[in-house]
Structures are given as structure tokens and as C-alpha cells.
Length: 218
Image (tube, rainbow, N blue to C red; front, side, top):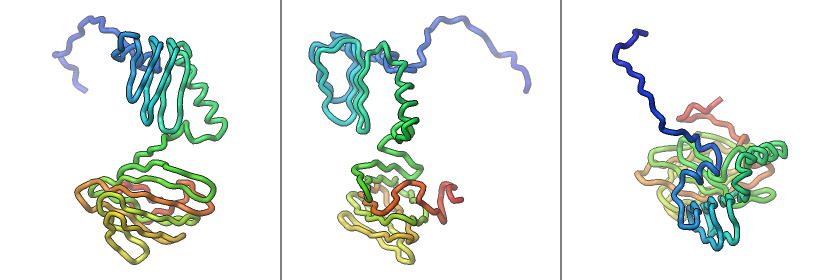
């Protein structure tokens, strides 16, 4: 590497905040007359100097000062701002209990789009999928689950075994156990589907990829 003669060092005092906690985020955010930083559908009464965030539903906070209240689809966090650094203890506890919340959100992003959980119980789970225009999932198979796909917006090109067909809105496809299949959005707008999985095991690792545009085959 060649040295440069066009570099300069200038002394500056511009401050620094790595926004490493909810308390730090409150300090940087715009606040109302009561010192509250609110985001989303939030109602507060007799509450001051707090960070209030709602992502999926109405959040109502009454009679609280110097707190952090964050609502998401999969969890709710309530704590004094002074305990903001203790969030990592909750994360560690989730990890020790073998829970999935510390690893992923309900909406999981993939190169082709995303999926999110809607409902789940013994033997089934329901997901919502979005496939970006021109993208497709891997050609794959599952050993322990069957799937139903219902198109709710856009147009899907579906491969099931040796058959390839196009599904329009309100049309559906059934993929039996151990059947090679693929989902593709060959259109110019986003494709949205509801996927119902049923079977004895529904983990994401029950997948055998035969072909994949993103290099995920083994």
C-alpha cells in the first residue's frame, strides 16, 4: 500500500452514542411535553420520561415514569429505564430454556422474501409468505410434513412432482409428504400466500434441497 500525502487529521468533539440500549434510544428520540418518546399506536396518561413503542396493537400506559414499554407481535418488554442493560439477562434465560424467541422474530427474512408465523399447535402451523417478483424458493422436499398453499395476492408458479401449474388468487395447491416441490413468483408484483403445514415434525430443518438459486443445497 502506498502512503498518501493528501490526508489530514482534524480535532473534533462531536459526541458519541452507540444506541446500545432502549434508554439510549429514548435519549435520542423526539419527545412530547411529558418527556415521552412514543412510536406506533400509543396512548399514555400521567406517564413521563418514558420510551413507549407499539408495533402491532394499541399500547396504553397509565401512571408510569421512567419506563420502557415495547410491544411486538411475539413479545412485550416492560422495565424501568435504569434496568435497560439487563435485557441481555432475559435473552440468556430464553437461551437456557431452549426457547426460539432469542434467535428469530415471527417474521423471518429469506433471500426470496419472508415468512411469518400466524398460528401453531400440536401437529400443525400456519404461515404467511411473501415472495418477491422474479424470485423462487428452492426445489425441495419434506419428510415429515405436508403443506397447503393458498394464493391471496399475485400469481404463483407451483411445481409438485412432475407437474407445473399457475395459481391465481383464491386458488390452492396441496403438497404431500416426501414430494418434490417448488414455489416461484414469475410476475412483476409481490406474491402473498397462506401456508398450512401438518405433520409429526414441523421444524425448519426438515428440508431436503435439490436445487437452489442462493447456494443453500448440501
